[in-house]
Image (cartoon, rainbow, N blue to C red):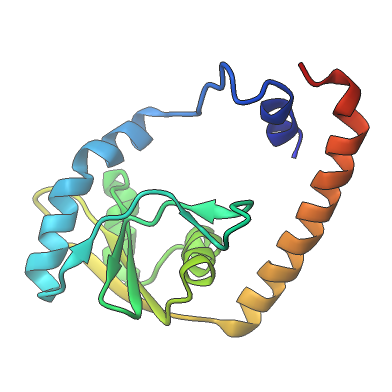
Length: 161
């Protein structure tokens, strides 16, 4: 919340995003992984940019792709050991639940395919169904966050450049 408030105070000037070597690797491999996904599933992936929940544009995310009218795609290109664990367990790591369910909430989709991709190895693709109970909790948490964020901006109004 304080990071967002700082961006608001600066009116979006000079904001440096976070990046890591693994994030950079994932961005580089994403087109290759998307092509592998399309080949393996025979689904056509439509790339989208940043999507917003509603016209107020206060909540949004960046899905890796949309599939037909009901689905979406999240691609991860993890390090070797994590990919092998994904292959072995055939499950999406729990750390991605907020991202995947959040993207379904943002886009009103019914399912999301999670793909773990490592060049030269089989991919792991797992269909994740929409969890309306989880999404309801997420929506309540976001409503509270947005209300709290509005309060923070009021507190900081005098400092805005």
